[in-house]
Every structure is written in C-alpha cells, then in structure tokens.
Length: 216
Ligand code: GRF
Image (cartoon, rainbow, N blue to C red; front, side, top):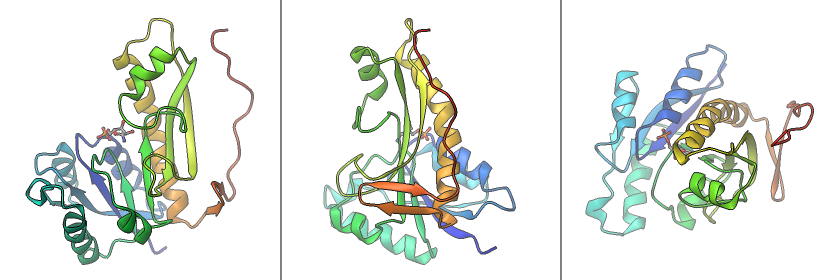
C-alpha cells in the first residue's frame, strides 16, 4: 500500500497530533505522518514529533508581521520539500488565506471542538455550557475559505452534564477528538470521501444505532 504523505500543522501541545501518530503506526493505516509544521518554535507538538522520529519544522509567523502571503509561501516551500499530499490542521492557530486554502482544496482537514455549525471560533466549551445545550462534541471537516465552515466528514457528540465545568467538558470532547480525527484522516487518505455540494459521503461507512437523550 502506498501511504499518503501527511503534514500535521500545530500551534500548541499536540494531543491530536499524538493520536494521529499513534494511529499511523498501524501497518494498514493509509497515511504516514511525514512532517509536523508549527508557526510557534516552542509548540509542544514539535517536541512530540521529534520524539516520534518525525520531521519537525517551525516557520515562525512573528517575523512576517501579518504578511500572511509571505508566511504561507514559506510554509508551502517546506510542504513541497517533504512531498506532502494532505494537510491535517490540529490546533493550528493561524487563519489561512483563500489562496492557500484553495490550493489545498479537498486535501486539507481540520478538527474543531464543537458540533459545527454550532459554536465556530474560540471558547467553544464555555459557550456550549452558557447556551445550555444538552449535547456538545467535535467535528472533522474539509477546510474551505470560511473559518470552521467546510463540509463535515465526522462528528462525535458527548452529553453536557448539569455540573460540568469548562475543563471537564473539554476533556470529554478531547477524548472523542482523538477517536474521530485518525478515522477521518484514514478515510481521506484512502480516497473514501466524496464531496456532494456542502456535504460529504464516506464510502463504506455506517451510521450509529439508536438515539441519545439528555437528561434521561
Ligand atoms: C483541539 O481542541 C482542537 O479541536 C482545536 O485545537 C485543540 C488542539 O489541541 N482545533 P491539541 O493541541 O491537539 O491537544
């Protein structure tokens, strides 16, 4: 099997990166994590990559002083040098330009800590608690120019409990992020995702059984 060469882009601790690295150990996983790229030289994700023996490169965004085109051109050089075919954003905290996103159309995915289209943007867990929703969760989606807007590939829902804190809810969601992100990347790498307008279809995937209620 020829594995797709994936770059994971991180700005922080990289727990989702850790889940992707672990999944990619399986001989039949259709993707290889060939590069970890960060806009922050001090990102924990870079150290995690080095520990795993994966190429880890920082393209520090600060010297570019808001010149996003120049910053992205530098990133693109690194991606090209490593023969990258798919980008997985995993806590990458820079908004990408339309040009960069379009160049990677259908080949770039993101994980977001809410059930999109609810709660795009930041502070999703506190906003879910404040809104009083009974379910919250995470979403993997294809990246399009609108932030947190691309066609959804997978979601996982968790209950919001009456006494939840932001931290408790975040931890419950994060555990599910670590499940759905490796699965979604595998589907993309294996060519199982078909885009139909604003939706995607995952070839050969089955839906869950039953319903969820909260409270019971
Ligand atoms: C995750 O909550 C992810 O959904 C969001 O950024 C966070 C990254 O966490 N996009 P980690 O660095 O993967 O631990």
